[in-house]
Image 1 (tube, rainbow, N blue to C red):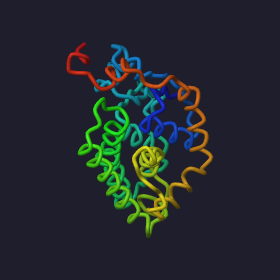
Image 2 (image 1 turned 180 degrees about the vertical axis):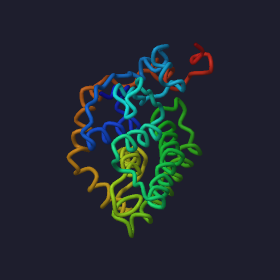
Image 3 (image 1 turned 45 degrees about the horizontal axis):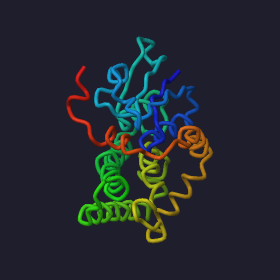
Length: 233
């Protein structure tokens, strides 16, 4: 059994998408980031960066003690290696998947996240910051569109954890100021992933937690106002 410490954000959706694809049994443990659950001492024991998602695998492949994993990219690699799914074993194909996985976790995710922050949450609308991250998101969409112009999926002809990592960060494209019609190959890929039964099930699992009140001003302080003092044990 996998315990998934989760909130319905793009990074959280990555893990439910994988688990639904793999058919692994799992239990969602909600981490309400708007209320500060991510700073609770018991959560910091498995996610020292006070970020969700994180998992505890109660039945690891080696049969030993439970394994905890934090950081969404690391979780995807762990689950892929545990199940033998969505990460090739052939070295060159594996390398390509990992390149695009790290492209997402180091590029698309952070840039789109800053896009969301300055466009939607910042108390002061700073045109330079809004334009900077909207334009960089647009550039990254262009990179992805080019890659998909001659590949069925992000890392080649097979569905992989690179697709699972990337898709949730494209779902809020309208909030990012993007138009998928400008990226026909990306749009084709996006619709393909959206129609997968596992993707549909994963986003259904999110609905009970999605129907929450809008982020309050106090919630914004929790999300965006933390310092080192908040992660001291």
